[in-house]
Length: 206
Image (cartoon, rainbow, N blue to C red; front, side):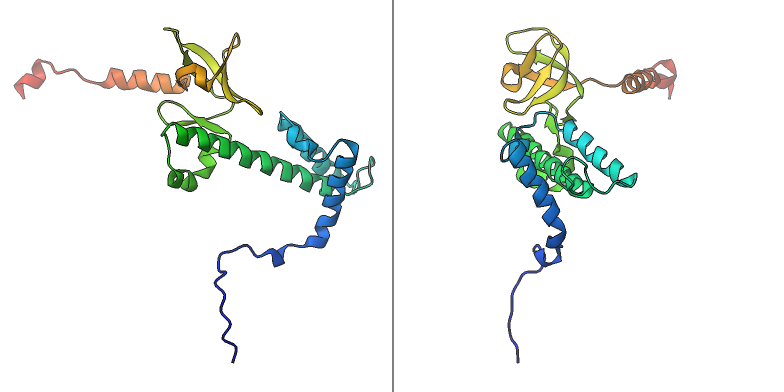
């Protein structure tokens, strides 16, 4: 009678991975390390370049070209590499956003686990609303009395900052920032204010 017991339910089942199909992906990584340097791809400061590369390889494959003429390796292997790169940066940005949020007491670990997508490529404003890179905000820099309009940006080495088109303000240089409401949101607020009925004589008589 076999009474072997192992509690591995819910753990990763690596036996499902078709490792043989990943050999060409490893060859692509080896070619990159030979052409540039090992892990050179991690130094990229604009992930859009990997999105572009991914689409080039996928498009070439869809058009019927199976191998990249530059290195004779499958386009799909190149595409998998670009997907891995993008996944790496997504995870990196997610961790940085969480560290900032946690250090400012805006979120807790359990909240982040439940809403991982909300924190990806995002940073929390003074209201705890997570804003994606590219979101327009108004920011109040330290030592100033007027806020400026700007855009949330991110530097790979220095982290998130607000670009006001004249000056870049990193997070330790600002008092607060918050998302600029869209025109539709502003109009909705105005309409709500107009519909608020002030008490008049009719109300007194009721």
